[in-house]
Image 1 (tube, rainbow, N blue to C red):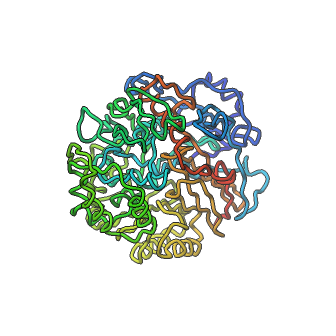
Image 2: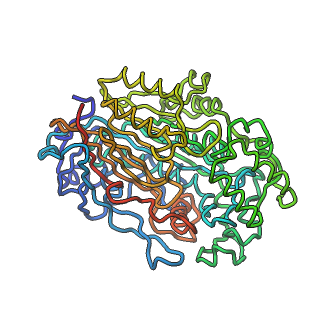
Image 3: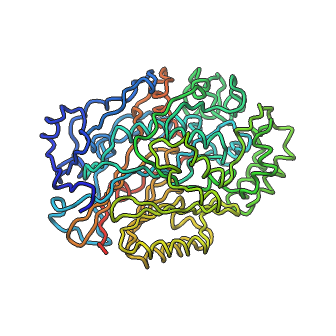
Length: 574
């Protein structure tokens, strides 16, 4: 028997649950098994009261009480989902819509009757991915590519910290799996935690996860110095009267927005242990240039006093083509362009906190006791990882379940994934050493976004090791779940683009020769609807989601198909 409680042992029917808790929360240690007619299987019930402990609009989160547990199905996309209002054209507002039903997938094993009563919870955790905490004033950013591709710049990026903190608040309020009711054991981030490989962004990420005060601003502490007050109609100017391209699409004028977005905010930090997996935007400047630039021209440019705000369409087109092909791994074309475009640059306040960080510095920051939060020390990384530069490791998920975190970034410089022989050999040894465990693999890149055949090699290796039941990743910013014969590949949408999701994953033993992986998507704790007069931390987190919905050129398929959202994935037990 797992150390996690059996769902059958802890079962409560919903009426008894509400009566016992007074609709306030689940007391510590109580599990909840949901029957097929309950919310985990698609039914919806009356809305519960707002989660206790979450700050009301306009209130400081630091003044909020510690969140108590709420019904584990109530705050997931099984219940409700932020849904666009109005026509498909023009700027759209958001409201609360019906949730997404759970889909049972049986490509790898049959779904046998009676498993609901038999199943035992083995693990329950949360995946966050692609938060892209962004210094929007960073000199190395390439917002001007919007002249060539309108989707190359996201108007909502000044609010990435606010959105990520709201996601932490949601996880803290939930605390249990919606199917098993088992306590959530940990949170795993699967990369692109930062956007520009920037030390300030790394600090914001670690404080968001572990708790603390964050000032999402670099450069001049009293003045914004990015593209959104440049006077260039290419960008949304929220504070000004300029009739820019985005206001013509319906974006609002919000006086005080840029000052509000740069004000200090507070993260409560996760109440759960959390682990970290590295992504290409964490490891590489601009997510695609070799990390050797950490001591070269781009490093100097990042901390310096100039920022390029615009390019002629032809120049933007040429640069976009180079970056898309990934054939400028050392950034030679890019740095040459910056050198010759000095006259177009805006003076900005130099700031050493914008410096890029090396893989060693990334690990050392995780090891810093100031960012310990709920632990574990290093959040998966050890001093050996810092010394060797190998950013992969294994960890114990629960009794009989092992987690493996991979580093799939291409250190040579590319946004696509890569996995070398040394890491594959280590993975082979680790899988063999834990052949009696169920294994869950985490990485940033997914099987179809490798540039060297590494995705196929990795799939083949995982299929040969029947103890592997799941490979969980991000990078594509889209929900997708693939059956690979013996294991499931679970890719989750980002938290920077609409619909801004994260995923709860629960593993159960069905005691009939099969296991089930339950995947349940969650949103941040921010309200679905927005109030343009509310520029509080909570109000901005809600606005973040609405702006993301309306981003020009944004892909409209990132929620993925129904069978990649809330699911039960059957797999044969080895």
